[in-house]
Image 1 (cartoon, one colour):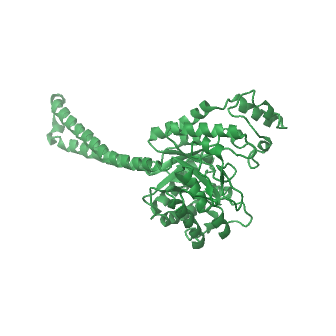
Image 2 (cartoon, rainbow, N blue to C red):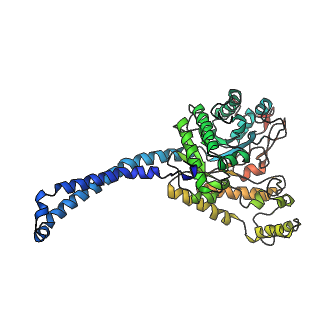
Image 3 (cartoon, helix red, strand yellow):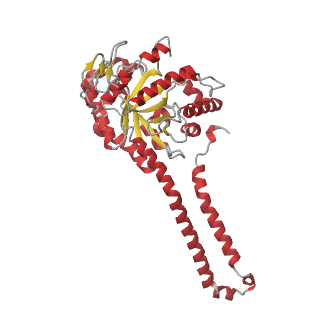
Length: 449
């Protein structure tokens, strides 16, 4: 069967089946409770005996209703208990940071090497993250270096050992960790097109989940796929369901993190129904407006590399100088539109409110585990205002968050190769976090084990 035809409504149908059986049994009982001679009665005698029949129908109907109510109360506590587990565990994901370019997005020409794994992020970085007040880390993991096509459940033990060391290093500082599957676009494109590749990714996830099944389920989370590049929402619904089931088979107790299609945007949640697994946290990413958060970037829409020092909040008047930086008239209009859109706190609030309402409707926990502003060409104060307003709005709706990222292009610290991380005080304060104490011997000392 094609993944496109997967029907996720089996759970609801299964829950209705007992009620249908009760109704059938009651109806059968009513049929057999009518005396055999009733069929020979005259039309008048049938009307004359309607009262007893109505009483029997009423009693049978009452039995059905009573049984349905009892069944509802029998099922509801189990549902509520499962949902409350995900909500409780979501409290470990209130304020976090992404550890990028360690096990994913490695731009070193030598690639994923022993030296890279041992030096890119160290115990001093994890201690610093804890000192700044973060409670969790999202660890981006590219599956491709471990993925053996045709035998995806056969993981290279040496590579897995490096990942184990990273996970244990994070847990040792009492930080929760999200193991986030974060492949490159070519890998995700295969998931879009090839059912057989999805099956292999299921095998991969099942083994990874089983490998970490003995870790503390309150502190280790599994994120199905970073930013699914599926334009077909129904295709993604089927793929995500299959992958979630594979994870659940490997790790029955751990909480899974799921997302909508189309790069996990907040609006995609509105098209979703929750999966039929109540131990799931839902997630979205927020980089709106993209023209502001990715100004100066070279991997996105081409004209954005012209932009720098964009104002925030935006008005038609304060973007004029920035629009003049763009040589093409059509793209210049995009900058002017940013001003006309009046991006500010209220605009952010309106978008986040939609995601929060979706989560409330379905009674599911929600996180925003990527957001940030590319720092190379952004005005530090405008960037700080955007970060401050966003995290404030998220917390207003009790949505946990994970900033992108620790030491990359959107970073909360500045870290030159071979040098200890230098915290960015403006960014830390914008996030409402703690400025750490001075360094001692290149390592923050207060939390040293």
